[in-house]
Image (cartoon, rainbow, N blue to C red; front, side, top):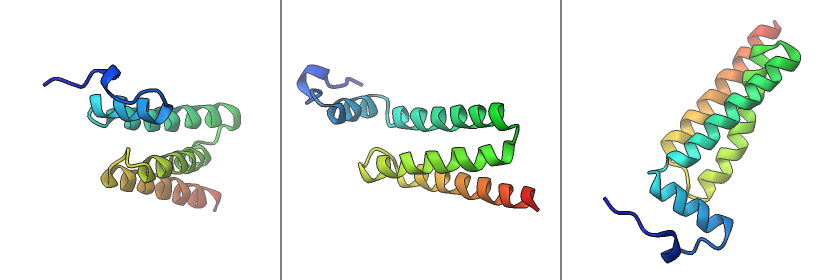
Amino acid sequence: MTYANPSTIDTDSLLGFLTYLNSVTGGFFVIGILLSLYLISLSIYYKINHDFTGGMALAGFLTFIVSLFFWLGDFLSVYIFIIVITMTIIGIVAMVIDQN
């Protein structure tokens, strides 16, 4: 399967370049960004506070905010967005249970 050359697509702006990268990778570029954001924020929070469930809640919330913008920009499918929402809810519920 051939992909469009970057010179034939409007890649002058960041939005055009992101659209090109997402189309070439089959949508996995944005998923990779979200997974990286989740893992980096979880590991940094855990390293600082030694609280895994709080890190899950924070990482889920940050990933939800970023994925909301990607979803509104039509870079993310509804199924992946629902998975992100589920991860956020699981992190918040785990944090609340751990507080009690």
